[in-house]
Image 1 (tube, rainbow, N blue to C red):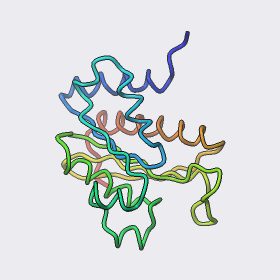
Image 2: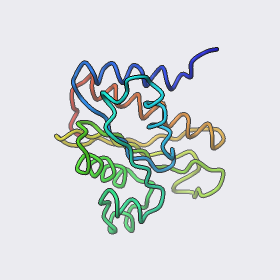
Image 3: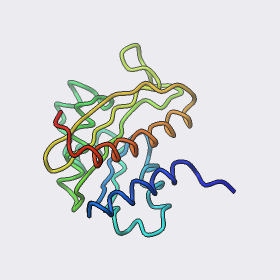
Length: 167
């Protein structure tokens, strides 16, 4: 049986976090905890995974992670501005040293011309600040979510490898 590529990627993330004595916290919307599931599938992840927040509704984003109502009104839940506030809020409400946030439109419905199905916004944050990006993924709901988890983990590695790039 072949190991899940996401778990293999999470294993690499864990090794890097352990090397740097860092700990990860997640803030997930469209992935519904899948990033957390991938990292906790790795034996020993309690050494480097601090906690995960699943904040699917706007109310949860505001109440649990402090996303400003104005941000949601002005930019929407699927935006780099919201992803940034999710990532920073996750750090503020945890003991983690690096966070990743994921929010998007996984489909098959819910998209618009401005925010089509497959649009996913990410943020990675440390205590020094955050960087964001958006990606457009193709495929069905499962595929968009899987690609989102892979990109979230890849971004953690990039942040750890490069030091923290200011955005």
